[in-house]
Structure formats: structure tokens, C-alpha cells
Length: 535
Image (cartoon, rainbow, N blue to C red; front, side):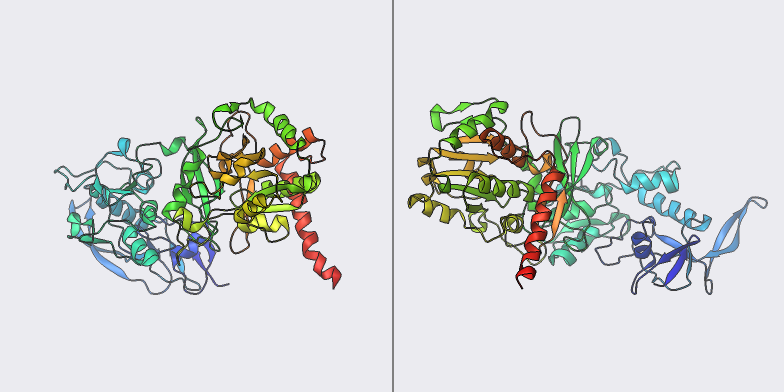
């Protein structure tokens, strides 16, 4: 691979790379505002100016202060070029830390801050703001402007999700390019010139497409803020864990931002993955963090309606075992896997079914039409379930759906049910037939159609409270890690099933997620090898 030198270090590059992209790929940051690896080059902020030292030098005439003569005298300086626009070439020598570059960066930074309001204490971007970071790194001098700054509109509602503060805006145009290039909707544009510039909406429009939160995500300063996250948390109190979006079968990689002091998730951000979501997420996917805390089930409930009673968490497995012990025809027990549950949970549920003595496996999944979900050609998959492929994979076969389950119940072929998750069965009264069964055991983290018809609800950990794996529509298995602890007495579904199995005297003993994964991977390898052996 060809290379060039950046500050004396060899940097490999690919055909078509610019200096900044090659440096970014090598893990080296050249200061920038307007450049983004997923967007076109604008080259308007000039923060990424570098000195190309190889080849013929271009010099610019300047006036330089001479202390001895106490006057400005004619001089020259190297002409700097924007690293986001300059193509990488073999044997190129580039300097991004020299005095000429540092002076230029300080000047650009000072220009951007001339009219910028000093409202960092109330700005949501504080703690992750490039203006703050680069000020400390490249300028660190007091503002020299003594006149009144230019004032612009503040707190402008751009749409249902985004608020705009024009005084903070540095006109990097990232938000415009997201709308134009990612979404194909020119809803944002610039007006005026110079220090009167501001971002505006197209006449008669709102910022209301499915990727509005990406305009806030790419904003390097606090000009665009999310109405959902606005004023809710300071980012320096937040920690981040690697997650996978539960919104659909695309499986966008996420940063799960949470406050460890309260065990609360505050937001999701896209995590770069060139093979899945690149740099982006849809609005609906970014809002899935809410289900971690909203409509949560935290207490086991035995019975239905007015006669239902709450149980102690430690008593739930024995109560479940008591109910399942009353099942006379074990082959009529239906085990419902969940398209929103991890592959580990589904694998243990399938093992539980086999040990119990039933082969009746079904799949509960969100219905796109019932939940109002529509896919698109950008990221949103037509399937609003994160792990349909994973559940099918661990089952080793195609699974019947809830309509088939209800038909089997009405036909008398299913007399009891163990169901994972709260996905599926949307629609008024769709699962009412299950209320006629004495044994309907629900293991779910949230309220939903399945838990609402259960004769025993047992809360389990949500995706943010456990380790797991989702398999997306491309067949890619992606792991996620625990961000926050589950409520007291609440465990992952696979661990709850192991506790119930122990009460029933079944040999289903897994201690850690790694144990489940080892068995799951071994079973998958054996399934892959089986056709070859028969051949």
C-alpha cells in the first residue's frame, strides 16, 4: 500500500484518499469541523489546514511585525492547504503540528469564537464540544474583540426533534449535507453571508424526516440540540457501553450512554461499522433506549385480573415450576422464542423445551404493519425485529408464528405456553385465546401483549442489562454488553429459565453468558457440519 509522511510518520492510504481521511483511518486526528468521513468535502472551516513540505513550495506575501523597527514589513509564509481536500500522494511530506499550522489553527479558532456566546455552562454540547477542545489545544488566548457580538435567533424549533441556536453555529454545513446526501431531502440551507450566516428551513417545511437526529449528532458544537436529550444530563457523568439497536433487523451498532450513579440510560449514538450502519442511525432506532426504563416489569405477578398477586423475586422460579409441574401432556407445551430477545435467551429456551419433552417451538415477533413500521433504502429494514434470524438459527428450523400458536390452542394441540419477550401479538384482543389456558408463563422485560395474557409474569433483564447476541438480516452475529445493572432480583431470561429448570429437576445448568455461547456456537458448528457428513 502506498504511504506518505505526516509529521514524520508513515501513513498508508488508499486510492482516492485525502490527507485527513488517511490520517483518520490511521487513528490520527487533524483538527477539523466541517469534515466528516461519511459526508462530502466542504472545506469551509479551514481548521484542517496543513503544510505540504514536499514538492515546489507556494509562498504567500504577508506583512509581519518587526519588533526592532516597530513596523509591519513585507514577508512571505508557506501557503497551507486544507487536509480534507488535498489528495494523498506517495512520498508526500505533510506537517500538521508546525508553527505555521498552529498559528493558522489559532487564527481560525479565534475567528469562529469572535461572535460565539460564552454559554458553555448551559450548553448541552459542553464536555464533547470541538470548540472547547480546540480552544484549549490550539488557541488558549483571551478574546480580543471588544465590540458587541452579532446576535442571531436562539431556541428555534426546527421540527419535532431538533432545536437550533444560530449564535452557536459555525456554519460547517454538516447538517445540510446529512439531509442532502444521506436522506436526499434538501430541507436545510444557509442564508446571508459572513458573520450573518445562519441555517434555515426550506419555506413551509419542518425538519421531520427519519434521520433528523443525525443532524444533531454530526454538529460539532451546540448549535443543534435534540429535544429529547436537551438539558437532561451532563456528558462527563455518562459512561458508554457497546450496544446493538433493537429497532429493526439492520442491527445498527450503538454507543449506549448511561449514568452509572443512577443506573439510567440517557441516549444512544451510532457506533461506526462500515458493514452495517456506517456512521448513522434512524430516529426511531435512537429512541429505543426509552424501553429500558418505560413500561418496565420489575415484580413477578401470579394470576390474572383482580385476583393477581405480586411475588417475591426469589419465589418466582418455584411458582413457575409448580405451574409447569401441573402440565399433564408435556408434548402440548408451546415454547415461544422471541425475535427481540438475545440468541442466548432463545438458545436456552429451545434447550428447555427439549429437556421438558416438547418440540413445539414458535416465534413471537413484531408485526411491521401493526406497529406502523416502514423500511427504507437507507438503513431501516422492513423487519422491525432485531433477532428474528438469531432465534431461527438457534432453533435449527423455521418457526411458526403467533397466529399458528393461536390456531393450535383453539385446536387443542397446545395446552400451556412458556413465552419469551414482549414483542408480538399487537392488536386489540389478538391473544385473548391464551387467557383460557391455566399455564401461560411470560418472561419479559416490558409490558406487552404476551405478558398481559400470562398467568405468571416473571420480569427479566432488558438488552441494556445483560450480555447477548443479535443476528441481523445479513446473518451477521453481533454481540452487545451490559450497560447498567438490572433491577433487584431480575436476571437475564436464560438464567431465569435455568432456575426454573433446576426446580423441575432438569439438567440445564449455565452459570455465565460465556457458557451459553460456547454451547450455542458448538451446536451451530455441528449443524453446519451435518450436511457435509451426510454427503
